[in-house]
Image 1 (cartoon, rainbow, N blue to C red):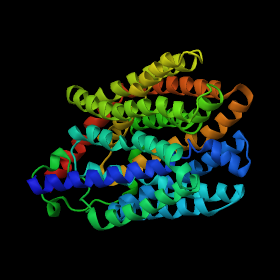
Image 2 (tube, rainbow, N blue to C red; image 1 turned 90 degrees about the vertical axis):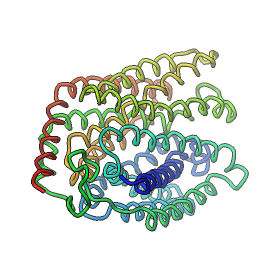
Image 3 (tube, rainbow, N blue to C red; image 1 turned 135 degrees about the horizontal axis):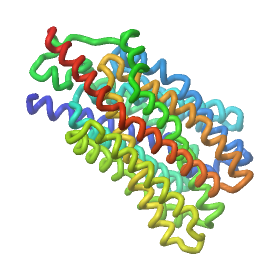
Length: 429
């Protein structure tokens, strides 16, 4: 790869990082807005849960469509469209003045939430298997940093500029700007170009692989993918419950004010961000030693995440220092699996259906994610937000650990089959 090409692929990483950072800021800042939005529309905690479930449900239903489009057409242009939709729907959410209207417009923001499979698939054609975990870890730094940026925007900036609606206007406008940057700045790459079997071949020799129903069906014949699907369904429950309820829990049950929330969550989120890169880096390193490497890292992450969230939630309210320590330890381990799961999907599927495979995984994830806020809202009414967060996290991560154990027995064969298939394709060129 030429020096110019190497620099350009890192330019693409920067653009995609900004897309994810600002998109996650827009998506996740609604969590810290909980109290203001509930007061504005005069709604209860259960109705609050429905607001978040609506967007997740829309995103869930559209994942298969986005996955197909990404494998069939130019991914860069579709990502630009997704960014435009993000900006437009966020503006609509800021404009409406009634709860039913906000429920609808907020649900519409889920349309672009299904866009990430194309982004990850395109990145896989810029970087080979030995680097993907680290690159995905770098990109996923954007999620917790975006959460932190949203928290700062909500708690410190929004009150000075007119409230939560003004914050939505800002992030919506940024979505439109990023759409222009992706449309004109990011080039499409031939699917499969970064596979090791194609080293030294140019784009003309590789050709263009497009969506194939035959290969799409093969996704469901890979045992590793079934374990990935199962852990995906269970694994998103804790993330969504923490995202949409943890700020309310800190304020309502642990008695934190805005400054205390920021002082607690800022270090936790920064450590969480580091956890993504640590997970991707360690996963890549261990993957070079054994095909089971990414799964091993993922299983350790969910197991220790469950242990430390239990210790945090059960810490006495007065012991803020111990609570913070346990939350920081939770933040180290809970993101370890994320970059490794994405890389594993691409370790076992052919290039022309990778967006589809990732979209199916996210579709299954979001079936769980869409119901998580509503479930947590109902549990919070009955048993308190702290208990709802605790039970959902511990049970869900325990299930993920079991599913990862299953994947340890299947991943070697599925990776070997893919590498054999790619080698046969390269030989026939």
